Amino acid sequence: MNARVYAVKANCNRLLDVARETYKENIGDIYQLNRSLSEEHNLPLTLVYQGTGFVFALKKNDIEGELPKGFINVSLKKGRWIFSNLELVCLFALKFVLVSDFHSEKDELKNEGRTRRNSPIE
Image 1 (cartoon, rainbow, N blue to C red):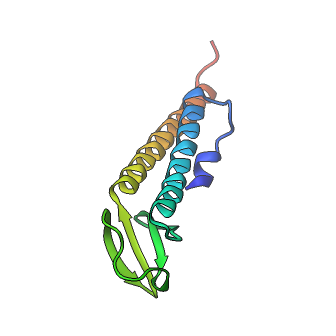
Image 2: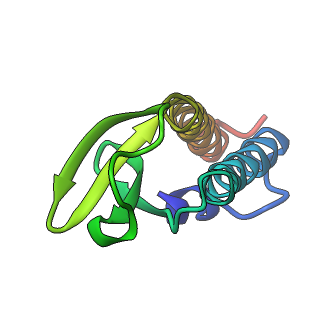
Image 3: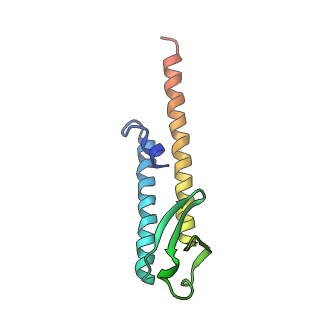
């Protein structure tokens, strides 16, 4: 996903530049959330990107008992707890919207370039 956002050269289109910067800030917010929750709960949380988005992961042996309240979609896979929380879900949804907007703008820019090349000389 990152490669697509940074594939278009900077300073080519202001809207793409704004979308790229907002995307970068959103990803930073996701990683900051991971650090904050790790510190708050004193747990070595890691972020994992799956096909459906980011989730938190925690080795089964890194916690005794249950996960703190506020975590959702909890499952145990290959010796790791995989889970999320509402803030992470919202941040990923925003990332998805930003990437969709970025691709729409990129397509418009691409089509605009074709139109200019194919237009008759006046």
